[in-house]
Length: 272
Image (cartoon, rainbow, N blue to C red; front, side, top):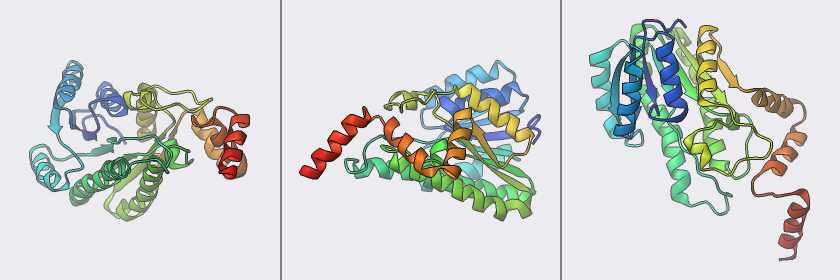
């Protein structure tokens, strides 16, 4: 996809990966960015930064979990700014906890935003892209959409769901000349990630690295875009030595301080 002169709608654009992707698209010559997020003030700050590059910016303060309000806003946005050539679904949230201790409202929030919100805005824009016989949709999953991580069970589940949804949609929309891409970053140094207990041996990449990799993948028309050498290594290990990766994921978990302590916890549980 050649992004020059095109219009893109980016969700989760007020921070992290969504912000970095928006800035990178502007630097690479995109004509118009429609930025979507809940925080109106942060959106305005990002818009000001991008406008200095020379890109037209429209901001939409929108909560993607409020499904009934999205339909009207997207209809108005399409009417005012069509055609929209690129949709990047970047909005997401993560809560970290062992599943036995997680609160129901926390995993419901992850499912509501990461899956339902993403699917709803995709449905609304994909229908319109189909009418113009052109479009590209990027769904931001995660390495955890390929390799599940302890203490991140619901987040992993939502990211696996995004990969499956993307694969199915890719086949469905091909007849309408719409490309559907999965972006799978490794752990990224964002505000959200800084609130998590990090896994051992995982080196975070920058949001800018994720954005640059995405744009390069768009030009190469890739269907799945992995970010970071750790992602390639983990996916390869999952295919060839799944038992080894499972052990590594267990030992790297922030809830396990060492193999000895893990064994002690196991013995204690068995005794109780």
